[in-house]
Image (cartoon, rainbow, N blue to C red):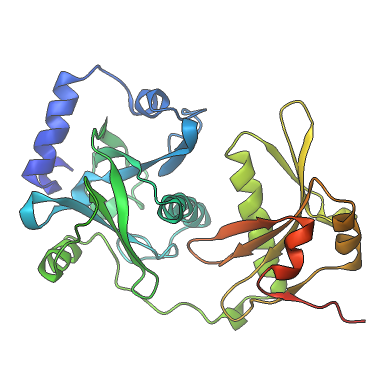
Length: 304
C-alpha cells in the first residue's frame, strides 16, 4: 500500500504515473518487450527481447540507504512467504523462476530493468489474500543490478544506479526491519532428496528455460534415445538434443549411459546439460559439446 512506501520512492512513482501515458500493468511490461505479457502478467520477473531481464520490485520494500541510494533486499528462500508461512507449489515455482533470472544477470555481469509496484493491500498479505491486486506499476528509468548474492544468509542485495556501492550494516538492519526478508533457515540436507527428484527438477528447469525463449522443449527421456530433451524451433527444426544431469549439495556426481555416449559420438546437435543446484533456489546450467564432456565437473566413469 502507498502508506508503506518510503516518501522518496513514492514521489518518483507518482511522478511517473502522472506524467507518463496511461497504461495497464500488462501494457507496461508488453511495452518493455515481454512476449505474451497478458499470460505472464502474474509472474514476478520476465525475460524480454534482447535477453533483458525485467523484475517487479515491490515499492513497499525499496529502502533508502546512505547517500540517498536505493536498494532492495531479495530473499533467496523460495519455500516461505514474506510473512514466514509456507508457499504453495505455484508460489514456489514463481519464486524459483524469479531468482533464476536474477542470478542470470549476476553471472553475466548485466543489469536489469525494474518495474516499481505498489499494491492495494498490506504488503504482508500479498501472497495470502486472494483479492490482492496491483495498485500501481511503473517502469523505473534507472538500471538496477545485483550488488551482493549471499547463499549462506539466503539474501541478495539489488542496487539502483551505478555499481560500486553497498548498503551499510545500519542500512541493512533498517531494511530488514521493513519485513522484506524472512529470517534465514538452514536448507534441508541433500539426503532428503532422491536422485530421481534432483533429475526431475533439472529436466523441469531446462524445459522452462528454453520455453522462455520461445522454443519447444520436449522431455523424451522415457524413450532412452541417448538424450532427455529435444529443443526445436517454431518450424520444427531440431536445435539441441540434451542429455540432462542434475546436481545438488552432496549429490554432485553423475554418469553418462552407454546410449548417451553413443549419441554424443554422433556429434551435433547433442549436448551434455549439467544443471547445478537443480532443486535449490537458483538453479543454473552449462552445456558441454561432445568433445568437452570428459572435462565436465562431476562426471564419473561408467561402471561395468
